[in-house]
Image 1 (cartoon, rainbow, N blue to C red):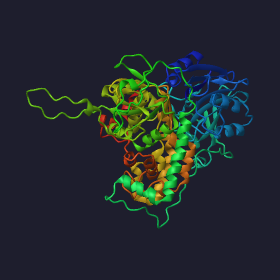
Image 2 (image 1 turned 135 degrees about the vertical axis):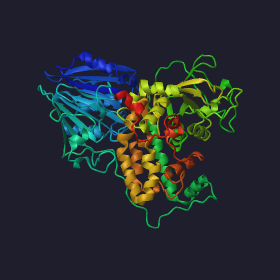
Image 3 (image 1 turned 60 degrees about the horizontal axis):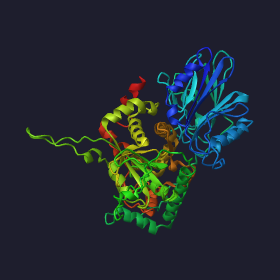
Image 4 (image 1 turned 90 degrees about the vertical axis):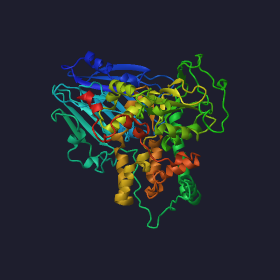
Length: 640
């Protein structure tokens, strides 16, 4: 994971010093705390470029400084992980491998083929010196952030960056619709020509309209910015479609005689799921196949982490033992210390992997699978967020003091309760560090103003604000031990890899709006809605989450969006993944619930979907009457 940016500017209007100041004041360095570097290059007598990289070292023995430069003068800024498609030796950085591959390319087709082969999350900026051409883009799911600022007038700059560099300039997200090529003009006019090589069969996010079929391509792609068409030219390379990691969706309708057994109140939800597994060899097979492909995705994302020398830290051995029923209470001597600090002082978890853990089915299945991947002696951080609740005080007599609000009431939000329930179902022999992240109203306001507003940008809805705030505090990882002999003591998760459950609802029919679509349009309407969900995921969620999480020098990883998982789920007909004729807590994400049942997560398997803004109670702490799609004035105040 890295913070990357480049700036192209006319020599008459800018100086190196002013551009470096812009970068220094930005948020790039937070993303890459291990190495920072800036390189200047002369494009022509009139145009210069600045490339800046800030590295979070996760793979390979040695830190590879960015931008990395080869003997031919090519420059690479890489913010991603190569999990497949190109072989990366375990002890070598994928930045080095990709630079070597791109340096061998002599044609546009070879560059496109190299980038399109990559499985894993990425955004890339590559300067091809011999052709004075800039290549850039994001993976088809948009799992890594990349913003652009397009020139608005003669001599104004063109910028690409992981985050907004300064609030005076308008930035929008680079659309994840293909791989881009930019050729800067060498003349005084300062023109920039952009060519899109679209992903195969790609559509505009949130629509089913193919990118190639849009007659107003220039207007569509520059939406949100005031672009001078005399300075910026966009074209689509009509003859070339780049191989995409986005599979086609199976649109088969259920057979006319298709139906699952009726659900009745005579059995519990978990009994119903168990009966389905026992009575259907097909569902049992698909459930196990999903578990297998998810296990591979999780395994890929937790292995091969560079071992960092760490400060002496607290290991948190079996932090859950005092909570889980039927597990013998361990004494403090069973909790090995990584430091010599006395009991009661701030501690730091030694875990290398953390999970955003609401106790919902997505995060709990991930936790159960991580447990199968990591050595038994390693601890795992489960980070659970709650926003302060201020219950109304009951009427008090005129005399006497008001009854204080108990601390447990302040943080007893739904996600905290389900988090502990899910914890009780996980492997009791594992050292689970259940970290309660408790956020007061004052902390929320301060962090939003100082950090979160600028990271959520350019998104600006109430939903973006709520999710952005919850994820930012979770990724920071500062809280208290929830259970164990150190319960209540401050703790800080410094795990650099954070696993998240994003992508499950979009593919497995998890949102409440899917039920409404099913009622209106039946199976055909639901299939169309799921197809839309997957196409718009790059524009709605993941760039924002990447900017938020990586602000703490940590990396987000999404097992449900592993290319193998997406391919498997897309290959299945919709009725093998969900059945919304069944009640909530069973019908949506049915296949995942069957998978959770076989993993022994019986209580978690039947929990209904609850969005993080409601589960953490940030929505209640803020304005209850706001709609998720409303523009959030708490965000826009920074950019007006």
